[in-house]
Image 1 (cartoon, rainbow, N blue to C red):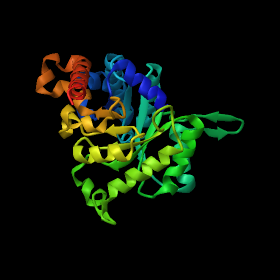
Image 2 (cartoon, rainbow, N blue to C red):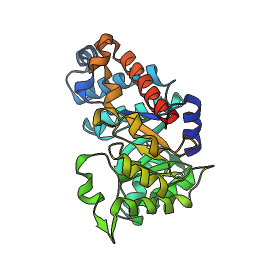
Image 3 (spheres, helix red, strand yellow):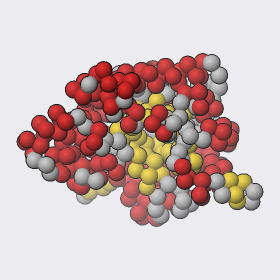
Length: 308
């Protein structure tokens, strides 16, 4: 699947991923009003509003982008109806040719980790039949439990040609409480990066590994170091836009070939209509605002890479 991701990036010339992390506060009132009139102010109504919101954004942006990243917590909060909206979103994105990165941040050991891997990027056997339950192309994984937690995911990646993005240096302000701690004189995130490169060496696509890393845009100097430590790992870069990252901060996350990284923006795109810059579109044209925000992001990153 890493080969398809790279192919999509080359085709769109847009190394970005749209984070489909919908909150009810992002969804325009006309969508919620229409859905609630039919389903009531229920979990089912909330999940349907999320799905309709997602669908409009996907329809307006899929031709510009290589991938999407739905954050499963934003769907799980609405219980089983929310998970159904998550699955509908995954399937619809794949029908549009998009690569889907399931932002699930799972991390456990043994059969539990294997079950997470099977449910999200693998298959489960039911009698004589097998099924791909959620069927994402990539998932995010927390490596805190070590190889016992990651190896079951890698095994499924090898079997199904799917991919991982392993948390290495996250974009949140308190990430340094653990990730920056020195171990034998080196920050922990560097040691995790070395392990990602090791895991990835046995799971290669054409030019890059199926095992990638998550490194926040808010820490560009650390990204520069980690790019050298993990030359064959794709880096998923959160923290662009709403969290403060901009194109000029990101050039060191990329290799000299202009590949090697994909930058995420979530509310900066899906809730773009709420920003002053895009308020001209109004609530009813929220997806058109998202499309323009995608184009602005593409030009920002492309310009930074051309001028580095």
